[in-house]
Image (cartoon, rainbow, N blue to C red):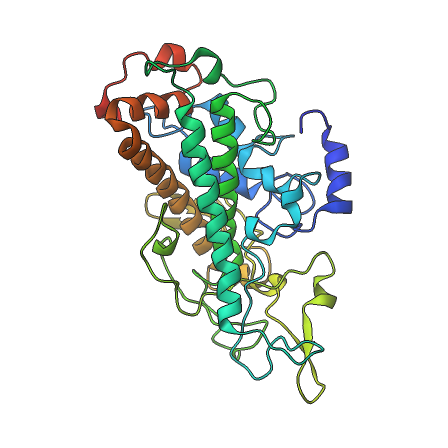
Length: 358
């Protein structure tokens, strides 16, 4: 997207972006680059640490994005890309509520919990598809002799682009990881996994049950999780920009009802990186997270809870990625690949990285 200036990007966002209400990827339109902030909180290197289990500055800019860019984690939100309207790329559309005639259409068919589950599973499948694509692309950073491939470990001029187009292996890997992490982070914003419902109100489409979880979902473990689909897990109805009109139904008696809308369930807007004087909450191993700004995210620390889980699972996905590299290629090659992926100058920094640094 570097060929487009920010003004054009924002103009296109108004016209084409069908997921305008999500963890943000720009500093505008009511967003505060939440995806970028979450990714940086999870993966930025500590200057005092010597580990390679983090991303150095220039490489992190490509993955997380920076002012005026979307980065790999924002690729799914680029208005001109086809992923903007793909529900599985944002974990949307798996709405359900245990009430009579829920989601009934003109033919009299209702939405079942199984149908909602299938839609959410498509989101996890999308994560795994990009996880596996990143694993495959990472292998191309080494040549046939197991050494770093000069042309495949560089950050190209247009690093984050359609991964099907010609690019360095490092940039293709970063793009697939970013697409996966976008869905992972949206899972926590768009589902009820970490939510605590409003106990002062009855259960309804605008106050659906929350699962009140305090940690990442084991069901999202990569690859091939053996954990069962979580009971009661839902995401919000999102039928394009006219959600308020489209996410409704009539019961058998002709009464109109709302479905569990994305706008009711999301925890997209809030202060990921608060100032010291903000009304912030401390989360172990993460730090301060500020309050949510609206809706579900503004009650019961739901925004903070979703961000905490998103940060932790972003780190988990990095660890799972490293583990699969090791299983497929052995310690030495896996260490070299991961070093090349995360270092800004891998041909200098990764010549003799001990496996203990892994």
